[in-house]
Length: 376
Image 1 (cartoon, rainbow, N blue to C red):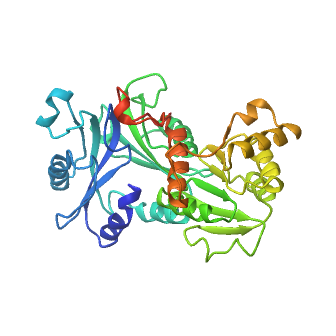
Image 2: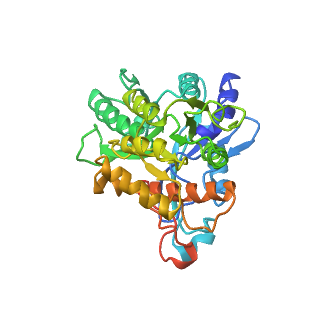
Image 3: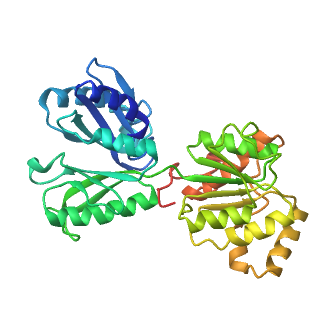
């Protein structure tokens, strides 16, 4: 929903009802992930996408029906590969799409959610999408860290179970459909709850204020990361040289990284790129980075000779073999990159593959599913 939140909020503020279709579960090679949403506005305008064009027409019609009836619906789209053209899902994947009406009456807290998302405050929206009792459908609860939930899904038992799980999804930054018994039993079936996990954007820390860093910052921003560029040299670490960065920091890299970790601003989604290839910066920085308990990716630029020298220096200060194995160096996938922009694509390709469990091989050489699961 994040990608259509601005348009949704505009209609909501004007007092309109909006049909909202959201992917809540995917199977096989589904084109859009859970959380992707499409709006049908009061004037019939369609905004967003749930399938990259495959089943938008069917979801559009269902959304119009939901707007007329006021009753939400959960619909599955997709059949076998041989018959996929019959329903328009040409990829052969399967989507579960939840379609509901959103308005000031049905979702009075939408402006609070939008404010949290804009401010980068974590918030999860849990919605009942399947239940034996139709009266439970569409019930909603907002979950924030260190706060009591807003709203209820139907019982204290359900609320407690979903709150715990929604906080876990927020920590991962993943949207998900969760299954429970009809009253929130951990072992049971009958109720499904979809959790939109509006976590703050993942962070990219770019160390080294060089021309390659400017290209990496642009690619990171394009991919939705909050980008910080850090260098100890104030003459190079300037906002004018890195306009795509959310912040440019003048500090010793290892000191800045340690402070960010101490402040709790590093997590398992964080990408760290070390582009300085200067031992006086790299060694103390990587000594900190490779010992972080949670980090998504650590890569360092340099030639084969630089890499070997760096490993020797890190070993000399006590970095273990297991810790060194976390380092991606020389940084990036083998794309034959030459320019800063091409190199940035190479680096991004590697950390995207790291995040989702991709092989980095051409898809034409692989068999089986194209999309990897969110667990990587």
